[in-house]
View 1 (cartoon, each protein chain N blue to C red):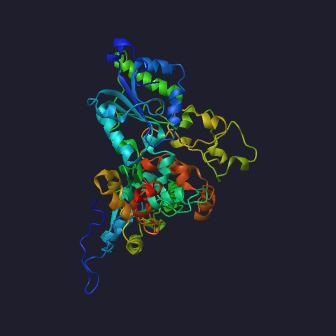
View 2 (view 1 turned 90 degrees about the vertical axis):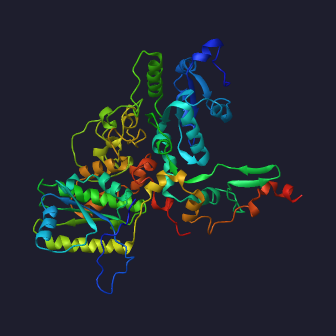
View 3 (view 1 turned 30 degrees about the horizontal axis):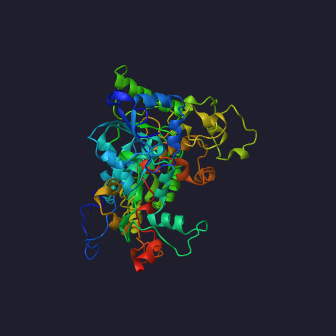
Length: 342
Length: 195
């Protein structure tokens, strides 16, 4: 595709413009967008795609020369890791009518957000000087570098990873790691209909392409007992029951705090929910809601018994904040902002 | 954030220099026991440090972990949760829920680098005003010894407005790590530069 693909004739002038920007992401969100299959043609018909670095050629300078608000929708699918992504997100915000935090990275930090447990030094040391890296001279990235042609600048790694809404104003959020393709189309369709005047525009701040309840609501498993006395992995469950709630069988399942919309795909195949659709409606801090839920169902009343049960969750931050650390109330571990003593 | 706003220090003679760190402690109390214990301490003129800000809940079981994390993120140095003794809950067994949340929260905040002692659980019945006052004094001194927490969420939000290099230096900077390429010159081009 070229920047002008799908722009045939004068119809182009009236087509709303769409930009898709990756920021710090794995590319899975772009794959999920392509996975809407033949609807991608409808997207190309409905929009003039002005920027999608993963898929087509495009220049940031073209965006810079646009009028403010000229782009109708911008989907940002990554988190804010470097000053470059922050700068481009701010630029796209200015040029766009609607800014959409697309996927878990943009909306809550996702897996890259777990880097907020480490200082920038720890992260760079790990990336450049661990046993898996051949770097005998201990070379480190530098943000500015003199070459014969002049001074080169590299995007600077920020001390703390942020979500899109911590950097710019966000109009809509599409959760998921990645968002389910049918949900992507549902969300885009809603906006297209609104633009055609055949449907209402979702209110600002809405979460599109997801439900307003929890994964448990979509999960077909049966719940009966309310107490659990251990947390284990699936291979440790003797007499695993394919019909009964995973949490009740002692598997740490994040369904109770996670937004629905995925179709409860993981628990359907006996894999506990890990929370990729983010916090359920009304939840301020995902991990806090989950801790509250777990603590409520543990069957133990003495500190020693409770400790024994909780030993089954060896990595509480990984369990409770796998996708949402950067968007939690504390946003990071202490070493991200404090001298790590090295 | 006025994190460590000193609370009208009235230093005793010869002690407590003006720079004494006064921790801010958010205390969650139960309507049926510890809140009344605090009230009783007041009625009996039992003194306890003014560092604690008590918030009344209907039950320690009402304590949402969100409250604790919000307190830390907005500048509290410690959080104290108090409720009825085990077996004496007004709502039968909700204080056990508080105990489990407390233990789980302590593990989580420790993984995030917050000393677990910054979250404390104290049982106190409505008759134990003196005991509660003593516990508040104990927690205050423990937290004073730990020093300020000063969680910088405000700074993290406005990071564009702060000097990134200063922030980098504040996190330890490059100290101890291998130096950057000599003289800031890309080694791939070092030969060309030398020419």
